[in-house]
Length: 438
Image (tube, rainbow, N blue to C red; front, top):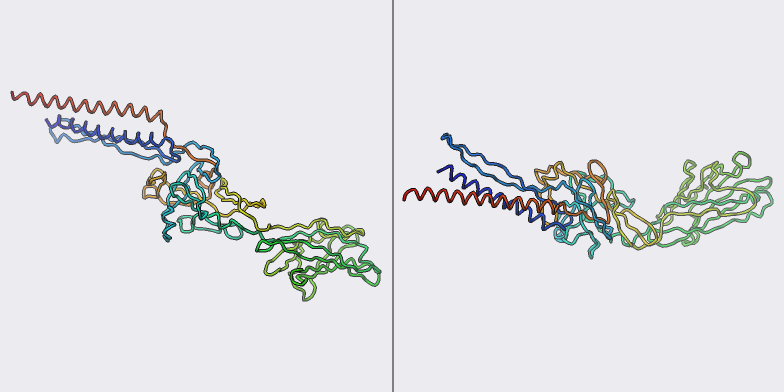
């Protein structure tokens, strides 16, 4: 009788196991259209019982376990939102909850996602519709992120785009190319200065001016081939920012090219560096490198012929500008585009990798959490190491294969019915045993 009862119990375990499998199938089918959903798979494990030394076989039955295949990648779908992000390959986007940010928690919970439709909220923080906030490393004033720790989320911060909504790009370098008339440094010339005005962008985003003058050094006899360069600030009563003596060659092979640039004694400004061809001036605390060209270089200040001709007055930087768009490139760099045409990196989104992605703990909203089974995390630059790349304007689809799930459902239904039939048969056999008393 114990053998008969073991068949009864084994079939009951079969019913439970197939019910578990059907639950996983129903979950998979329900999430066919869920972006970033990772399908469940059910494994059956046999149970073997000892006959207790009687020699009779005892049916052990079966148990079922569900596993989520987090390491599988779904197909990517193109969207129209630049901050719809998907990971093409291995790795996860770091996210946290909006509730944790709103509470001001010092230690935000780290969660992982393979895709998300992120959009700025009222504070400019990128989050998806379920309240998951995208994390990354903000850049410094020089556009770099430094050397953040890679084995923890301590330096990760919410990506906030409105902190750079209006940003100036102050001028740090200017390129000055002018031809000076060789005839003006000869004896008997009138010694009149040649002047021009150029603009630069201040740290406040305003457009300011610099005055530049070239005064020939007129000798009593012959030709000096030397000019006095003076840089002034018109906004400060033409205060002198720098004064230099520029000498040119008058014979081949460097005729008309710079020989030397010498700073006037006691004059403000930085010394001329012949290795770079630049000198440094300070305008109200803003340092600007003025590139005159290197000695002997053709592309530099020149002294030829009898005409004063500005060839190039160029500067870097831009005035105050408005943010018009944000996108994330394949390496995770969050790039802001401004109406002036400037593109600036404001943050970088790393990819999180763990030794065993399938060991991650699954959470709501297609999010995951590091666990003992997954192993420790490491933050990679997207595209480096084992990680894939970040794709903007895309979402990762569900990994559910509906045809395969329907096939599994038919198999599960048949298996469930068969186990139920065994229970019915055992019941009939027990009934026959009972009837033997009559």
